[in-house]
Image (cartoon, rainbow, N blue to C red; front, top):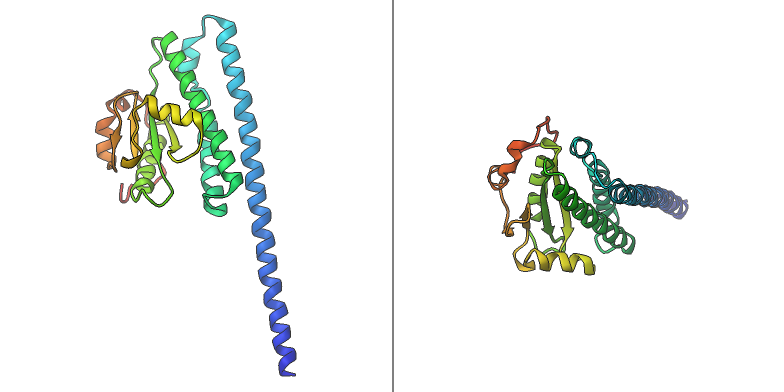
Amino acid sequence: MTWQKYILAFVITAAIFGTAFYIATRLDAQRIADIRTTQDAISIDILSSETQFELLGNLDCKAISQNPVLSEELNTIAGKLSVAEQNLGTDNSQVTLLKKQYSLFEIKDYLLMQQISQKCHNFKPVYVLYFYSNAGDCADCSRAGDVLTYLRETYPGLRVYSFDYNLDLSALRTLETLRYVAGNKLPAFVINNRAPVYGFKTLQQMQSLIPELKTLATTTATTTTTGI
């Protein structure tokens, strides 16, 4: 009877682990599917915005300034990617592919904002290009990301573009070169195309580095300020 109990216990334990593994796999697959759906929607929005810009000739600059292009969509996919990265790992091939696509969307949106700001003189976007590494060689990158998340939630008009410096993407390499970003000093911040700023910055320091925040409306942030 003793060996039968051991077998029964083994079967029950295996069933529990198998069920948990199956559920986790299904949830991860659903997260990937959700991210891809959002990316498809963003891709269409980018194409639509570019087409509108080319067709109209004279954009309604007031409408553009009141409704920032793709801001909420980019924030949504950033959150989902973060969850997928935590659950599937930073080296997962699907996560890496999705990060590349997302990075291209960010660069596209950044360039589109440059074009609109040149055409619409009353539209002055405030943005931060944030370069980080999750390869274990940037102890302050996580805290730096928390500070930027808080600022983005406090100032909805602030556009934060986050890039994994180590991502193998030619367009990203070009952006890093154009903005003179050094990969051995991460985290790095490029604020409104000014010279890069390196190292962790507290919330107060980041606010000082971005005086343009005073021109943006604020809202109640939900992120805790502890440690930032």
